[in-house]
Length: 217
Image (cartoon, rainbow, N blue to C red; front, side, top):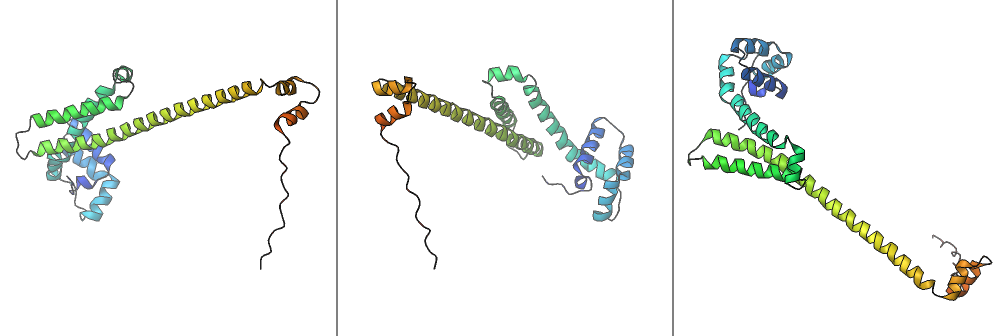
């Protein structure tokens, strides 16, 4: 849900500080004094609201809207943080892929939300589902990164196998050639091994000098 009230227009950092002050039980009049004294707030009030201060009604509306949504988001983040707190233990359970475990936990949270849904138009439920969708996007990115890393690891393993196979083929090729007496003599003889190799392999191909460049008319 997009909000367009005075507080909703404030910078994210200011709204976060405001939510924390509300969660700590700071009195409303002190919060209003603090808000209306901030330069960034004054600039927005001047440009968008004819310099009218944020009042008690604005703060009350925020308590019932943006602040409540922020609390739900903090709760969801806290639960997911709890799941990832013991990362090493979780990695052992899910074979090193924590993002899969987080996805499972998120799916369970979705199931829990719908289990309590009575079929009506529940605004609180819609708000929690919006938050879960935002978290879901982050988990999708994490899983995409894990899958890409796994793909690269498989590709690297294949390249290593191909390199080992190529080296083994070269060794086998050399061992076959070493069976020929002249090849063995060329390798072991201190006299003129290049001459003996030429006798076995034939003369090196002679490259022809390039012809004259064509004339451009």
